[in-house]
Length: 275
Image (tube, rainbow, N blue to C red; front, side, top):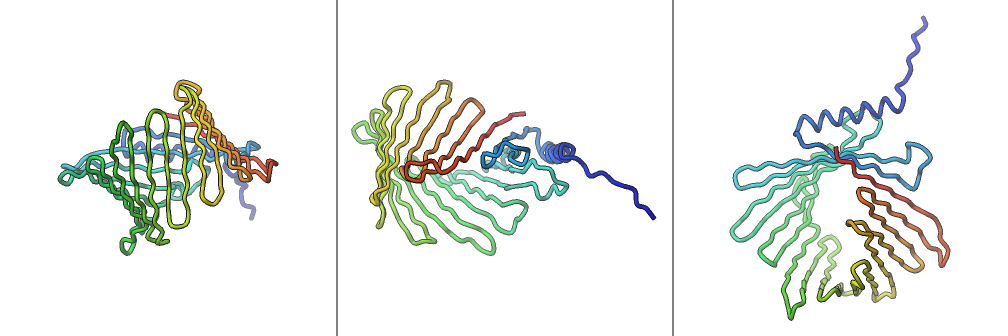
């Protein structure tokens, strides 16, 4: 007995089927249209294997005094298993408790709803609190931080103490901003660093960073007009990073350094497409 030959679906057909299925799932949930992002992975331009397309979608509603937001990010790749496409699913609830504005956001990886990453934020004027935790069988707190802002002689100052529960490490970040100069100092028991950012003119900003362990980096940002920019970050003996924003395109180029030699090139290109 001879079985009839079957031809497997080609890549283009499978891609169209996967994307169409995602549009059906997202479209039935809300009239809001998703956004398509296409990345080039690892600088690979040779074939479609270098592309990393994804769809993101979000919507919002309210229930009494609680504002609710929710959404998902999903792969737009050739597959017959739609359940494997979601990267993450998230939901956020916001409300007011007395003088405090409080919000809680939970994010699930894929379709595994047994555990979630949880962020809780509370704000009261110039004081804010932030907590990062994970929820599964119980609630486990990982990080806690607070921020207090105030003005002093025309300068904006923010004090931000932070505590990592997992590593039992604490540090504090103090930020100072006045007349086009920003200073940020990060201090912990073992490490300290200072970043001084200076707006040289309307188009150029320079920000060197010095660390107590001897590490040095310099960031230069050049405005190209219309919210477009080119940012270059040099970390001696480590890397040169370039970020070029041009309208809805964003290109990131990472050049690892071996002494003064370039050891390789990693390219990521992203395009936001609004339907």
